[in-house]
Length: 168
Image 1 (cartoon, helix red, strand yellow):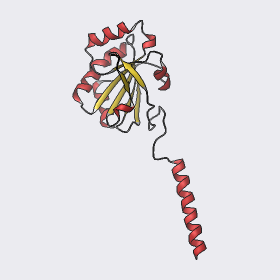
Image 2: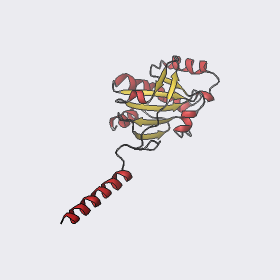
Image 3: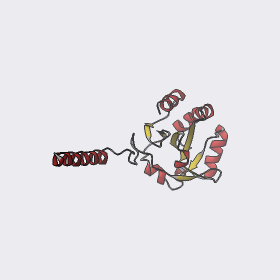
Image 4: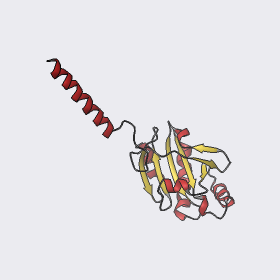
């Protein structure tokens, strides 16, 4: 009887270990939906440093954009409106600075549109590559735990942004 009990416990422990090895509690880091968003740290237009991990506990919309992109320009006012109306949401606009003529171009774009959310400068395009951005704009919606819930390629309307954020 003791042998049967010992073997049963051993089989249970092995099964339990295999199950959690295959289905980990914390999501793997990646850029697909359900993955933990890769952390990054970039400078803002103001020269301050900002990391994605510092925003844990908030819903985050990461938007990859460039000033030369007409659809990017069209969605920026709606992004500002979303930021203004939601205390638990942070809009991060990651600019592909390596494709811009200068940082002054980015600054005047932000000033012209009256944008107050953080604009991060991806000077070498490393974060754009890490997030596998192939066209602009591309947005990722990250929940309070840092997990990517949605990736959207193309310009978003105000309603779409709110719908994605509500589902985080």
